[in-house]
Amino acid sequence: MGFFDKLKEGLKKTKDSFVAKVNTLVNSFTKIDEDFFEELEETLILSDIGAVTAENICTKLRAEVKRTGTTDTAAVKGLLKGIVADMLRGDNSLMLDTKPSAILVIGVNGAGKTTTIGKLAANLKRDGKKVIVAAADTFRAAAIDQLNVWTDRAGVDIVKHAEGSDPASVVFDACSAAKARNADVLIIDTAGRLHNKKNLMDELRKISGIVSKQLPECSLETLLVLDATTGQNAVNQARLFKEVCDITGIVLTKLDGTAKGGIILPIKDELGIPVKLVGVGEKIDDLQNFIPEDYAEILFAEDENTKTDDEDENEEDE
Image (tube, rainbow, N blue to C red):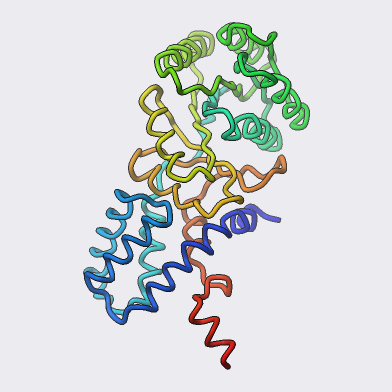
């Protein structure tokens, strides 16, 4: 199965939920008026897009309707598709332009951080890159063992110390290993704690400082891993993490297990953080680059799964 097909399958629950609501709305109105926009805004909010982004989308749609002279409600989906793709465009690619490049992976426990690192390492190795993983989440029980399992699956090296060790010392040794082994990418696992923002900020600053000192010319990505199934809570997590560190991109996991894939929009629209990777399954090759145009295309594509209840009843009558 290709990347597009995997994303399509992963977004199925989101698509069926969101587009069914939009179809019902479109079929309930004969013209595009203020009542239509109010109903659309409510529909977007109920699809985990959030009030602020829903309002922004409707504002852009009003402008497009006026610009194009559109009067048919059926044309709204095409306009929405273009708006969604435009809102998500940006620098969605990973910054891996130095040798080595470093990727700092952050996120709360349970979001899928460890599996994301394993899948990302496997993807990069498939692309011909030499990868080293630093097990710097040293305080969570079994975190190092779990990461070891995934690096074995991916076939990449891991730098680890005993549980409870100083994360900074792990990162220092990993940077040294990256230079000595001529690695292309160093991926650094970090502790996922938000209950004490000052401690988290101090730890991330210390780790970033070591990377900058040991690998002064390297590109540094800071990827925040979020669980799509948590909906608006994931957006709130991103907001909190943004207060303590410079996030360069989002990894959205478990997209295949939720109808809340619409949260990609407020993350980019309200926080200005691009989604760079999405997880669409449990297999090691089920992490893929996020392409805004593909997301919009899949979300608004017509197929039999997006029919409204009224359409299904009409077919049965026939």
